[in-house]
Image (cartoon, rainbow, N blue to C red; front, side, top):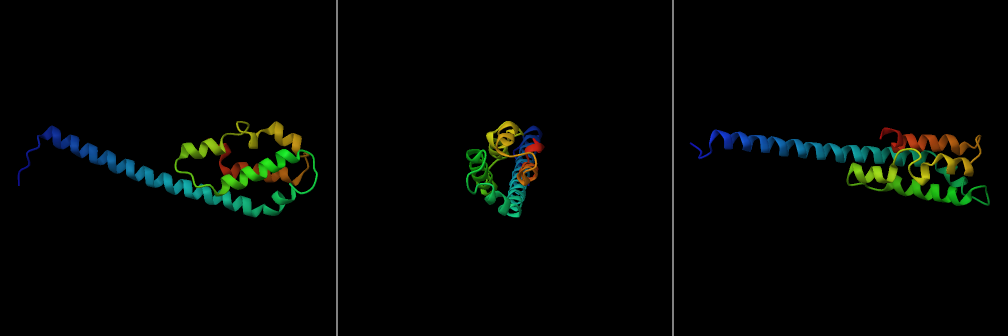
Length: 131
């Protein structure tokens, strides 16, 4: 069976099909990566739930930031992102967003506070250092 395509049209069609296939595979991989990172975020929040909850109890130094931090990390841990860019907007690099701003953290927590270690682990598992 002969087709009415010229060799150039056939080549162009094949390249277009290959490009569409690669794009679809990339999108599927991105969805998988987003899901895996979400599970890592949830796991770190659940692992440190008690310390996080204790950090916002009563009147403590920097309670506004502590409450903000608790709310923010808990919210984005469970958030389902559609794209990596959207995820980056919420997770960000260290010192770029309020929740991971070292000055804010140092004002709210003492150097020997157990939350300091938890914050480092949260930032690592959230992917702050991957961007």
